[in-house]
Image 1 (tube, helix red, strand yellow):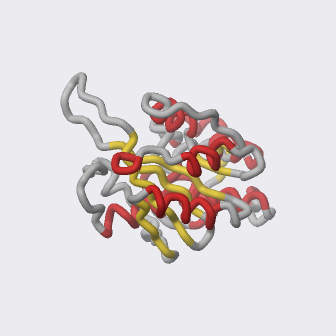
Image 2: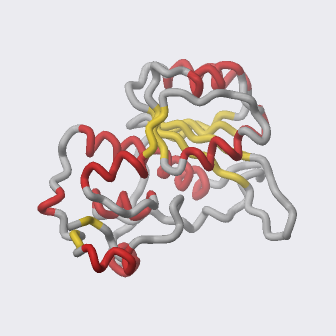
Image 3: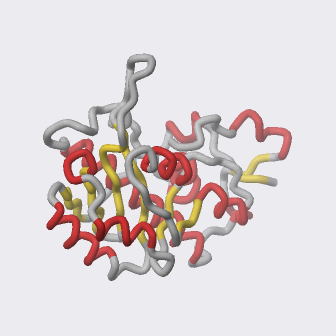
Length: 215
């Protein structure tokens, strides 16, 4: 038996919220301070956001890089500050554990603009298979483990806007925080697959698994 949540089951769940502190990082000095605080954390959640394109052939660079510990999320506005050396060093540090979902897509997009060698990263899509979870999207993984639904309402908003709205900040912070929460919950042995209400038979897999691996 494998574990997967259907779109309808997910839609019926109550919304999740990020109750921690959000810090918008839009100067190189603020980036250095943020990295200094993040280095104190045992685990860092990772995600990125890019301004959506609605025209064929039009593409944008990664605008936002989110790094979260369990109580604070830092939103690095790359479109304003680029990638400071302190941030690059953190992403390359094999001694600092970072966890994300579909991270190779994030790396590929970041590498269009920045040269860095990511180290110390854990891919959630691979990690969760140890518990027979076959879903790949962050939204579904969070729903399975915590019975809450991550909102995707801000996903296609303008991440290069002069000021990030409160809704954008909470959306971005929650995605990075969710990665740390999922990994910690599983790593600490809190999930019992045989008690999960979303267990499905093998012949039901194709009906439940989302084709969108990121959201």
